[in-house]
Amino acid sequence: MSDAVSPRRSPDRPRHRDRHGRGMRGPVAPPQVPLAVSRAASFDDLVRESAERLERAWPQLASVAFGVREVPLPDEDGAEWDGLGAPVPLGRLVPARGDRPDQVIVYRRPVELRSKTRDERALLVHEVVVEQVAELLGQTPESIDPRYGLD
Image (cartoon, rainbow, N blue to C red; front, side, top):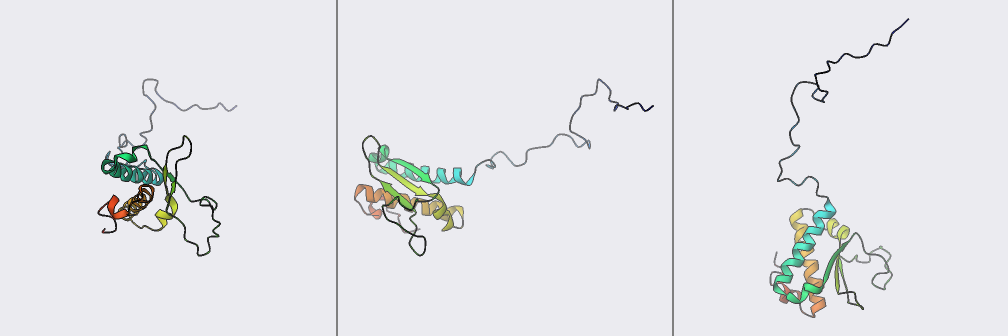
């Protein structure tokens, strides 16, 4: 006869995961380090910061929608490109139509592939946004942002 032996645990001792007596674990990283921010969310922030910077100088941009897409679709510009040597756009201006406002779209993957560091990415995102806004307003990029092309 074999009786199943149940593990003994005193009823007054709570069960917890501190198996080696080292105490509770601390945070993985300091609170100022953004661990949960994805690359896509970080890219969205870059586009938003660039748009807000331009809106301060150009109030008429308040009605423009700024957005991010992963990659351009082959038929978005009305032209077929096969990806074999044809330039891949970094951004696009979609003119207003009906109730839809003007849109400035920045393509995340092509921009990320052309930049190595976060600073380079931020600069390239801002340049793409400035170029699209300049096209929208019928201005030169240098008149939209005097620092365009200098960095």
